[in-house]
Length: 136
Image (cartoon, rainbow, N blue to C red):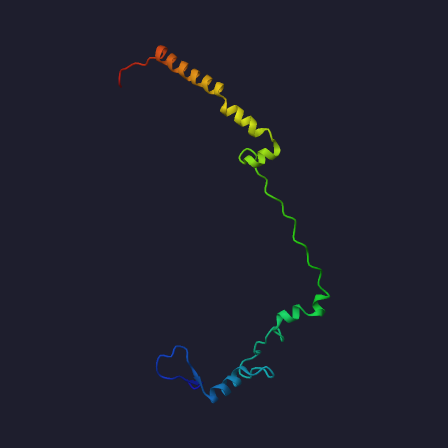
């Protein structure tokens, strides 16, 4: 190609441009001052910002004086805890809940009454609910 001279060997994308290649590029694409003579209606792309120091621009007094004041963070709320699955929350709502649960579960009278009911049910089943012993 007349535009550039490429070295022999595997250099990846290493390209050596000649002076005549740069002149030909200027003839094809033109410059920022003049348009492209060989391409109708084509102009070289320009940078959108002339000053790329964006941090300095944003923090400048001219821009900061026009901006609205900084908003405060929105108020956050604590997640609602179900008192039936969180004992601490239940105790906050009902301080007597711990004593009530101990009284209902630890009561020996309740345990013995339940054991008697179960025993009576088993005896009743043995006495009156005989199933047929035949196997199908």
